[in-house]
Length: 426
Image 1 (cartoon, rainbow, N blue to C red):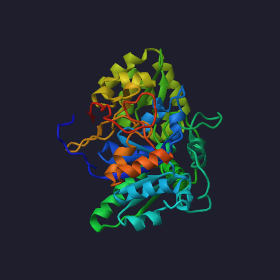
Image 2 (image 1 turned 120 degrees about the horizontal axis):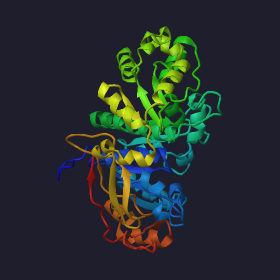
Image 3 (image 1 turned 180 degrees about the vertical axis):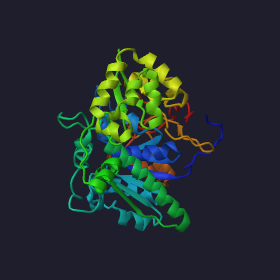
């Protein structure tokens, strides 16, 4: 739990977030959770595309946007106008990090490329996330998670054998690209602390997918075997998969000989351990289909809850197959604070996924919900040294947009005191 007054790991680090949708927004959200001051830059006409991913027309009540942009302050500025570009350049002068996920070359064309910005701020860590990276024959292509899953090989090995291609159930290339980007930013920031020099951090959705094919690539390099779909089964160990019970499914990880023997003991069937087809892991992998059938026949004799009690008591790694609702009802998920809340000025109390990494001295915190479109425009520019009169001119010209947190109508206007959420830690 958060101790009042506890420092945050990235407190004092300023991040300019010029991102859209998921990969870049997830990267900067991870940095914000650890205490960085992240300034989300959006366009005035609707903002980040995820604001439109809601059931209604109100861009301020999008669950998709709120999921990726908590803990950030927001400004809305028109980057098609040179005055809007100058606003971002002003922010960069005092920033430590910039994160962007535009198609390579787009920000260079308007004067916000990494070379131009590092001339303003030599210590800037400039992070770019794209579909295919900043170099190579595909650098100019747009990229989506689905395309990256297909081209990284992930779709070729996901799902059940003999079925049409299936993607991983979550946008794993988007999220992994954001995670790898945050890892790269922090590595570059440590280098900057040592040398004073910033650098270019470059990653992509494609690389994020390829990097996660660890077992499959290792097998291919060693044997030439190409991985194919195996459902929930493991490629190197058995039994290690979801199996049917009398009333549902159970995931069993009896991946070594000791746990295999414990499983057989719980099943009360010495014949399995005596069967030469299942004598050791190599034999079980050779006869994995037969093994699954034998285990399913036995597991269907009892409901999932009874098997869980018996297998846990025997020390066999196992768990139930949850849907999302069941995940957040689980006492372990709750104990680890993987469900936290903030108060949103339009949506009221909003639930979030908690931080998955716990730091003992500098805990991550979920301090505020995602910003309203342009909620902190005036505040952020004033901090950057822009005079009030110039801010007023930018607002009047439509280059800058501001939505006060307590203005429920969404009309532009001067920021007033926002409704601040209760701080939650993990």
